[in-house]
Length: 67
Image (cartoon, rainbow, N blue to C red; front, top):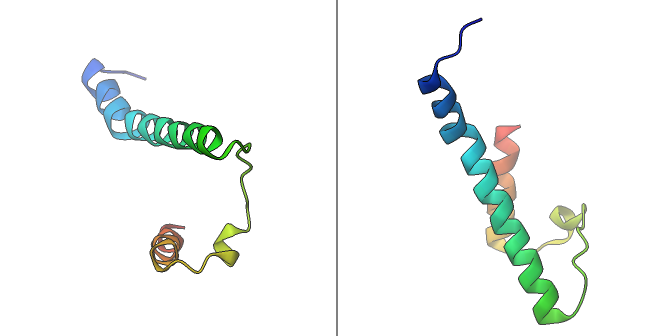
């Protein structure tokens, strides 16, 4: 199996960096939530069933088409 530096850089740019940026964005906002509200951030796996926000519904609908 051969690896080229160019191909590895392309995978890093196309896959890893977007994932890392999304992760950093999430951590930053979870930390900000904890500081502002003085509550610990606890993920809710059922929030997609509970939300009534139109934008949340639209994002979740778009996400469902990817799976």
